[in-house]
Length: 231
Image (tube, rainbow, N blue to C red; front, side, top):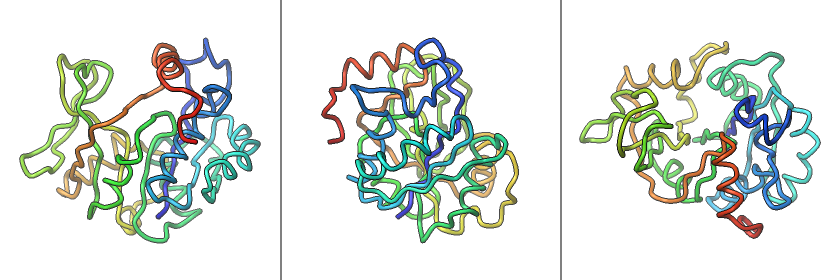
């Protein structure tokens, strides 16, 4: 199974700690953060990873042999000529490197255990992996029905605990085949279209969930996780 890994973020909130670097390659005890993500994908059973990139794609190109050797995955790098958003980046990569069957989509700046990916791999149809957090303020909440169908999303800033997106999706090979390749958002365009068609369901995951998108969260990850993670 293939995994399409969204690496296009500019990392604006991390400028004070990573300068102009790609946030997916932020140093974690001497290893790129992305190496830890790839290790979990390998453990889950993924064999090929497609890196969807634009900003500082040169860093990913330089690190590609190291990432491939360290993870044991076959890696492909697809570079957008201009930023296409999370949705456009995925659509572009799907056309450049077509999936060989069911595939995963995930963010390059979030650490999850391999179980999260296995849930999406083993499910049928289009799924979103969700996880429960005690404080939703930083995340958009996921509303879903009793039978697990996604009904919509709530904006960031909600008070209290709840289910939020873990940023992992599982799609059938033809799920987005008919969608035109153009700049768009995963969260604002592609997912709402699936929700309107009642095609998007949730998979509940309980485990490590760390988004390194802020200096505090990156520092906490470095403190809590040792250099042996993913080896």
